[in-house]
Amino acid sequence: NAGVTQTPKFQVLKTGQSMTLQCAQDMNHEYMSWYRQDPGMGLRLIHYSVGAGITDQGEVPNGYNVSRSTTEDFPLRLLSAAPSQTSVYFCASSGGPLGEQYFGPGTRLTVT
Amino acid sequence: SQQGEEDPQALSIQEGENATMNCSYKTSINNLQWYRQNSGRGLVHLILIRSNEREKHSGRLRVTLDTSKKSSSLLITASRAADTASYFCATDAKRESGGSNYKLTFGKGTLLTVNP
Figure 1: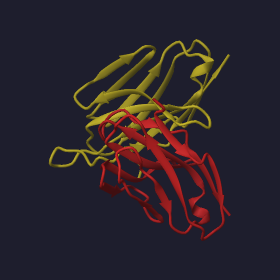
Figure 2 (figure 1 turned 135 degrees about the vertical axis):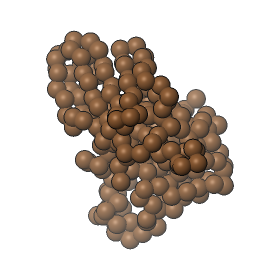
Figure 3 (figure 1 turned 90 degrees about the vertical axis):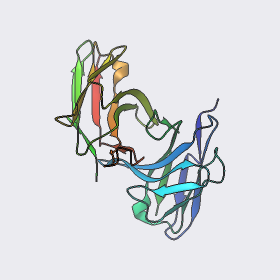
Figure 4 (figure 1 turned 60 degrees about the vertical axis):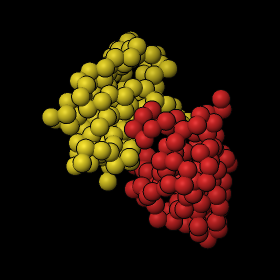
């Protein structure tokens, strides 16, 4: 199993550009989530999904959209990138929302 | 807002010593988890303790949970240089109905440095 994969590993955007961060898992997990990690802030939940077709907002959802059309994939869309979205983004999955979370390797995003 | 907060923010010890990190949280929980993050990597799950458990062991790790004080501690015994990493606690919030809010909230972490 590849586990949780994220692409790209690094990305530089200009302010106002849009892009999609990809996340996929091959463990048939129902629960998937996106976090951002900033220095001194720990991880903050952006959006999460408890199954295909079901998504909900986390702590810092503004400026981000998600969809869950399949169990395997949970893409995160930045609608109009801002410098405040410069961060490292982690995707995670688990068999249940309260269980062991499996994290991807992260995407380092810089918005100039 | 952060549900869990780790203490201390940073800890530096010698190889072979024990390391203790603490986590405090604000609301009732269903379970509490500890994760490790090596520099530049994703988080790795270490241990999960349920709200009705008081202590749990896994190898050199010992986790305690005191729901009356809303706190948990992670003890790493006989530390090694390879234990150098950031350690995070994560909690969900229990709803009044007894279910979960399904949002796992992480603290800011403790940076542990184990010197050879």
